[in-house]
Image (tube, rainbow, N blue to C red; front, side, top):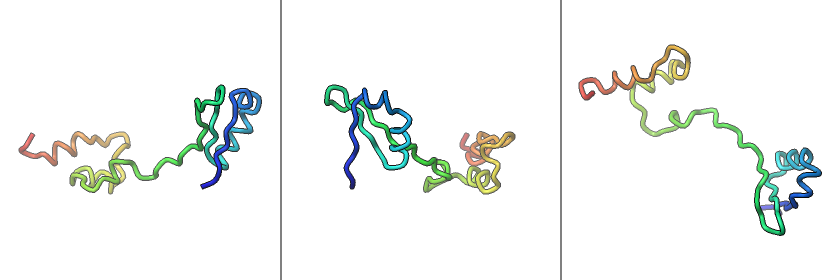
Length: 91
């Protein structure tokens, strides 16, 4: 792992745009105040293309059906209906 860059608040103030772009390109930059790390500038993580619930090991059949048909999260697709159908008589 490479050396992490450390800068002062004063340097951050005078070079904000440049340093934010550097963090996005090269990785984390630590910001110090009187020699103590007080903040970090880190690259934005790319969002996962698959939502968390879709990565779960177990999904109910109703939710799987909504995901497979692409209807989950769209207007008109109600996950409570799928949950109720899965529960059947257990509700």
